[in-house]
Length: 178
Image 1: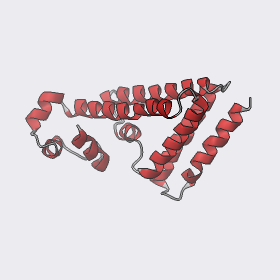
Image 2 (image 1 turned 90 degrees about the vertical axis):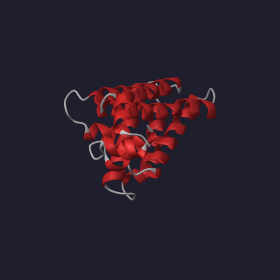
Image 3 (image 1 turned 180 degrees about the vertical axis):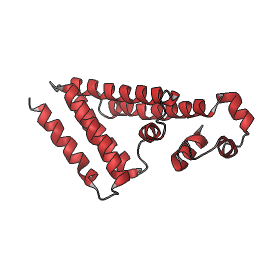
Image 4 (image 1 turned 120 degrees about the horizontal axis):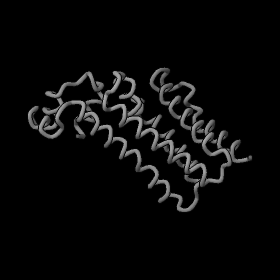
């Protein structure tokens, strides 16, 4: 699975074939099909694994700042900024959503479910942090972070995403005053 995820990151989902994935995994095409049925099933499983790894952030934030949701929220901002600046390839889920536009592709549900779950975690964190308009803050933060990822990919390292952390913190401060 790790081989497939890395190949999808490097070449895109449509840019890499099952033969190359099987070879990178030290396997063969028939074994891959036996485990996953088809390439779309493999893509879905890879996206589920990526999503599961990204969900770990919520546990890590709770461990780093136990019982301090406001600090966890700012920690989430720090983590998001670090991810954006450390990996200019962007979010695997967003990249897959852009690439797999065909109506009814099974990966679309995986992507939507993962992104919705992430937003719900953030909404809940904002609520626990005592923000009155917690849903609005969470949605605004998601828009800023997702936009910063796209800027990193399209404009380059020196783009407006350089101000992501300061902008998110100002937004949190503004929402926290009400």
